[in-house]
Length: 169
Length: 318
Image (cartoon, rainbow over all chains, first blue to last red; front, side):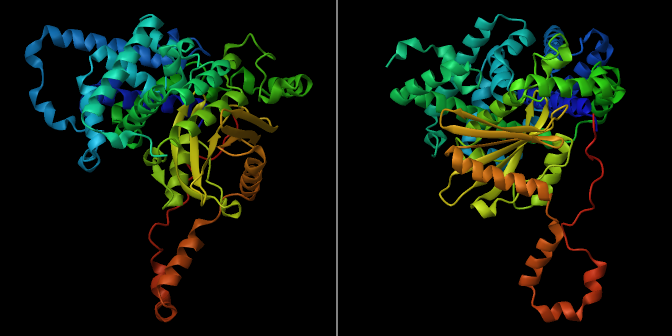
């Protein structure tokens, strides 16, 4: 496979992981990525070779998500109540671990704007500038959301007595 | 000491590996003096590790049909598609680049940024040092907590190697470092700016960890061994054939060099054939006579776990 193909696939795998972490629902996440890629294909000409492909893809995904949330809000009746069942991202066996379950819960409790920043930075490893570009906010806002998100999660995990989280070595 | 000089943002940047190198030592010194701040940094790292543990399984799930299809479409439409031989793949350009590299020295990079600065394609290309920095960060991160160190264990090395080869897009394998007292415990795939990298993790008897980061640079020129010291983590890096290697560990340069030599030699020798090893294990478990009695069965049924060699990710020159 070509290097470009591999690179693109890595970014798309990354988009899928982010979408899953953001939406917590498998089919919603795949739909979001699918919609984002449809748009990316349509706009491929606007991508400048040599610029940041990853940030470009994440920005499209984010815009699609914002639109979806907006249109869902205008049709509140269509919220899918049954989808709660499919919310389990990881095998049940994995979520049995207390700190994983608590992390998942702490993530859910974050305001969405903070959750996005935390996921883009800590899970997807985007640079702060890339996150700012993706979300269309100043870098100072990225930093303050990141800080608040991390402290909120920290407080949650500490409350649950997750001493085990401390580094072992 | 100087605690007030380090900002909150810098603590985050330190955790995320985005801190300017000249500030890193400063922050590390501060963390050594301030247990509260050090605990915060550790908690932030633990959060990230938990997130990876929760959501990295998605990376191994197959994408839905439409997503696969769209990926293919996008690949065909995007500029920078190296199926269509971009300018830098043309023979004379590569020759010129090679000459530049020799003349300019290029500080150990595989294509000096300075050499062809105006091209955005080149601007995006990572230097070998950046690769080594990523390896160092990854080492720091994934050795920080024993529970999150690997995505896939080394119990089945074939599976580990073939999965990582698929991610990297070239054949990679975890070298045998038994000679220098290191045991492979597993590996993980990490997205980097140049595509997926593979991180193999080893441990010695004293429970000390060494990681080997392998990536496929877009154009590889053999480079001399490079060395960097980042806090307490030493990293040795080089390019061999189509792959770039970075070896990181909390040890002296001399000790790490011995490990690098072992990696280098084993990589030169190529991957070990996996089957005989399994066969031996079976032989040890099963008494000999049984096998003599049923030679036919042995031939008809290949041992479990043996898979056809994949031909989908042969190394390809870009």
